[in-house]
Image 1 (cartoon, rainbow, N blue to C red):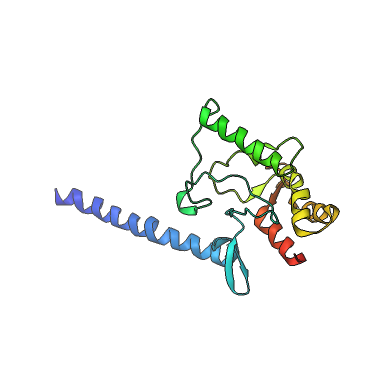
Image 2 (image 1 turned 60 degrees about the vertical axis):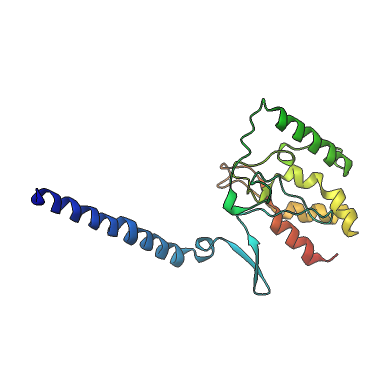
Length: 189
């Protein structure tokens, strides 16, 4: 019986070391060598302090900033430790009531155009750092008024921050809210 167990135990231990330790270390090493910023979470630093990540949204609520889409991560918005969707289906009364209330709130802030879907819905992870160009454009008047800048100046900034589809076909055009708001802060008030 020991003759049968010894190879099995040896194989389990060898594969554990190879696949459980060796492979992850090799992948991490290659990622650190080839793309260190992405391997470390695409962190954004200002004055030596980490202020966010290109990959995780942040809650901006002041009128002088572009607002992100809703986060479904529970009471703490954009909590990366609680990534989740809302789990509310299209027939959910709670979802419909929230969307209607959000549309009314957005219209009260001056968004009088057709409200983009991402303005009132959450992403699958609840952490999406991007909004659609339509949602960004819908917020231009509010941000310009709050900052005392012209709408044309803010519109030009938004247009310059639109990220296109990968290889021209994958994904949708999008705007990273944190990067857009940092560019706004760099311009002044």
